[in-house]
Image 1 (tube, rainbow, N blue to C red):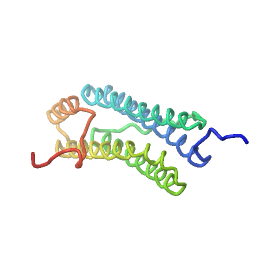
Image 2: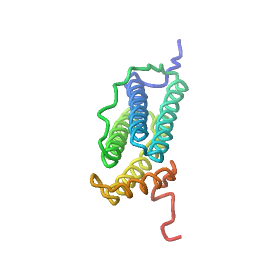
Image 3: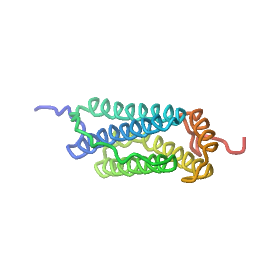
Length: 184
């Protein structure tokens, strides 16, 4: 009797491979936005977005390692070109939020699939990514709020300067509600 070494269903393995492609696309979106920021002399925003692009590649690598750990086969697909470039800082961070929402929705579908299949190892693995997406969406909303407070599409040069500096000093870690004590 042959023992199967692939512990992932074909459907779940494909969904995880699709998520790898989406994470790669997200990294490219962040790179495109970082290059746009650089072209517009927004060095702080550029630096932040470059770091965030790397974080998306880390997510991709973790999913690759998980598929391999479970005996599945990783398939690297082509990614589409991210576009269009934003025309201002507000649009830039609207694009960041939209990309994070797309990632979250995709991850939720994989979590649901793992529950339907009773693949508790995959369900458990995905919990770090669910929490990561909570942080990512919170961060994106915070950046978007800051851009709106700085004047949105009608931002002055001084506001752009200050916002660029602020975002350049923003960390990549953004704790969510259950990780902080709001009364401390």
